[in-house]
Amino acid sequence: MLRQVLHELTIPTRGRGLHEFTREVAAWIAKCGFKEGLLTLHLRHTSASLLIQENADPDVRADLERFFARLAPDGDPMFAHTVEGADDMSAHVRTALTTVNLSIPVRDGRLALGTWQGIHLWEHRRQPHTRRVALHFIGE
Amino acid sequence: MLRQVLHELTIPTRGRGLHEFTREVAAWIAKCGFKEGLLTLHLRHTSASLLIQENADPDVRADLERFFARLAPDGDPMFAHTVEGADDMSAHVRTALTTVNLSIPVRDGRLALGTWQGIHLWEHRRQPHTRRVALHFIGE
Amino acid sequence: MLRQVLHELTIPTRGRGLHEFTREVAAWIAKCGFKEGLLTLHLRHTSASLLIQENADPDVRADLERFFARLAPDGDPMFAHTVEGADDMSAHVRTALTTVNLSIPVRDGRLALGTWQGIHLWEHRRQPHTRRVALHFIGE
Image (cartoon, each protein chain N blue to C red):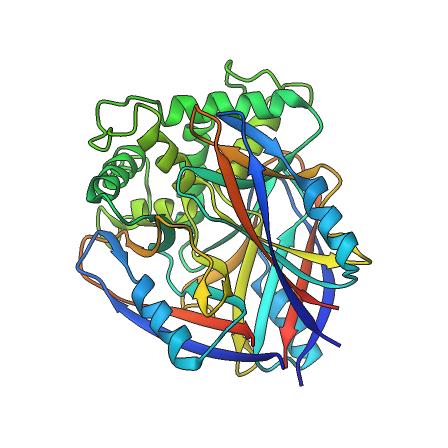
């Protein structure tokens, strides 16, 4: 019998960087007893992203940060939108280059992630923020 | 009782730039009386994108445009695919760097978007086009 | 009567490049007799992407490859994560710049893709790999 459940996770960040929250998502799936279905995550912000990436070697996260800092540098003189500081428009650009939606199948009560995949909230602002992720599950 | 509905929106663009159509999507949800569920949008083109981004300050949209014009410039001598003009291959690159799919939960009859999030069709070609977005809703 | 089905495709790659597998996905939809619904694909890897892009002119694929090779070059001295070779961290960056999830409506028994859209697995590593894509369908 198919059913759907909505939920919202609140993720506090400590400023710019990748914050893994696979465990929080898996805990919600376990608590609700979902066996098979589709999980969708939607981040309700325009200056942070959702990213599925390697969660083993912390160098990967540091390299991703360095790469995006070079690609979309804070305080780029090209930007007109500067009212909220030098990291504001670069954060919007980083968000546009990545994504705010993820859709992941669930089977046997677990996310169908690969061995090295973790779900991350990528905070693009330098200051800590409280971020909200809307969750939707449909299945059994 | 779960149900699903398919629909298609036609979005005329005036050439390159971000065109917000959150209102058209919300109107369809209201008209169908959806309360809770999952909305998926799929853009049926390879030289335009779907983007959730800030819809308040127009400078954000202008800065995104400038950033992507510098990152993937029209007429880049690197490109071999030039038959449709200098903005053709750069449009494909911009599409690959962003996305053509969005999945957004619906609750209390409304999209679970954040305060500053708007749904945009990002036209990457310089000429106006008529773009088609396939919509799918499942829920109640 | 709504139903859901889970599946997994195994896609062998011949090293870096775009590998179209629209046909394999369409064959699964036909075999299962799906008429209307939502198809989700999730690639279970961190150094390859899913990409919907033009499948007509092979120059588009070659140009995308060239663009990303310039944007995120192998062996960039900026990278600390080098244990698996010069193409390892650049592969993670390319994956972050694109996506590993796709959601596509199905109607009249067919994917709601545009005329020029094909579903590709983008292998970012130089060596051949065996890649797994989790599929989820919900609908009728």
